Each structure stands twice: as C-alpha cells, then as structure tokens.
Image 1 (cartoon, rainbow, N blue to C red):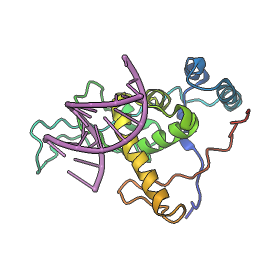
Image 2 (cartoon, rainbow, N blue to C red; image 1 turned 180 degrees about the vertical axis):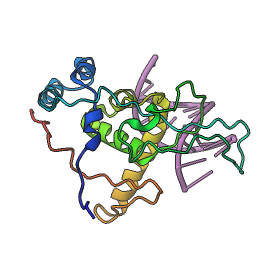
Image 3 (cartoon, protein in one colour; image 1 turned 60 degrees about the horizontal axis):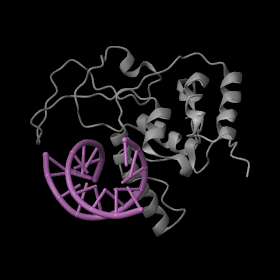
Length: 186
DNA sequence: TGAGAAATAT
DNA sequence: AATATTTCTC
C-alpha cells in the first residue's frame, strides 16, 4: 500500500501563487521566507490556479439531535480530493453551518501554521494562506485553540508517544516544517 | 482592531 | 465530543 510516510504535498499545486503570497510578504511573513516561496513556486510553475475548498455546509435551523439528509448533495468531503471538491456543483452562498474540519482542511490549517511559524501563526494569516473559501478568522481562531490545547496535552504528558489524535480527524502532522525549511537567518 | 485564553453554549 | 460564541485581557 503505498503509502508509508507520504509527506508529499499533493495539494502543493493548490498553494497560493506568488502573486497571492506577495501581498502577504508585506509584513506577515519574513522576507526570507517569502522569498523562499517565490523560488519554489517559480520553479514549480504548476498549473492549478487556485483550488477553492469549501465546506459541505448544510443549513440546519433547528439543530438538535436527529438529522436527515435529503438533498441530493452527496456529502463529499474536500478531503482526499484534489481541487475538485466544492468547485464542481457546490455553489457558494452557503449559510452559516457548523464547519466540518475535514482532514484536508486540517492539512491546510496545519500546513499554514507550519509555514507561518509560531511567530506569525495568527488566525488572520492562517486564513489567508489557507485560501479556503468561506472560512473566517473566527473559524481558525476557534480551531486554533483546539489545536494548541492538543499540542499542550501531547507535550505535557509525553513528548513523543502520542502520534495519533483522539479524534476522527487524525491530527497526524509531522514535526517537520517542510523540505524547504528556509527559515534561516538569524 | 486583533489575538489568546477560558468559560460557556449548542 | 466538536465547533461556535461570548467574555475578558493585552
């Protein structure tokens, strides 16, 4: 089964292009880091303009237990999906619904945080580098808490055993920032 | 205004 | 339990 340690960022193609990163480099990201991206992106010259991920929102007014799915919209998690995702039929203009943090969304989140670094891993920046449609600062802010709490928990108990997350999402992210790791300087 | 954390609500 | 919302502080 292929697999093993697949740290291959397949969604790498969905990363924001230089044009989108440029505005970020204004002050959010250290120039050295931003510059590194430019090099990568420049050399990659990948297609995929911008894959917009969106959450499978289902408006449910009364929301207490019991929920039925009538719409013909198959619950398609953006996860395990390359770009297609909501681009196909999902039309924007969704209402507010509970955000479903799929593994894919997590990846964007984790990766965004990793790229920015503890220094700039703020909701505002994360939201931007994730480039997920419909996501808000509050969304990531809320999850950021969970994420941080999770880290604290794992670190507090033991700094190396719990590779798995007690959730259905599976927070399996490697401590490795990435191959580029251009955080040099200083 | 924006982020971080805790409490709190659904 | 997971996510959202609110409250408070910096």
